[in-house]
Length: 120
Image (cartoon, rainbow, N blue to C red; front, side, top):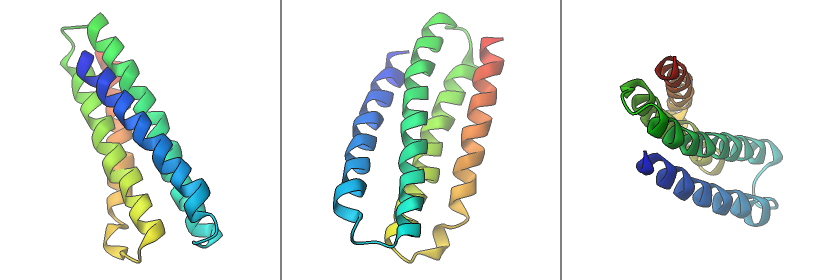
């Protein structure tokens, strides 16, 4: 499905920009432990944006599998919740977002399981 390939590419471009910002602009401005949290957000962002590109290719191969599409949307939601919350947590003292991060991780896990089921 073209939507996931395009979305994955856009999210990859955003991940590269966010990663470069962290490596160059934040390195000397935030504490090393907070930078590590930020880098974890970037890592998961990149992995799952690439996953979305794969989902687009799988959705074309298995057009009758709604599970793959649902899984893809869960990966996208996971990027926003997991990586997004880590970006904010590393830059601001917003503790309310702490519980959001595991929801993003859960979204990733359920998404991958649904994609596997959709292929089977």
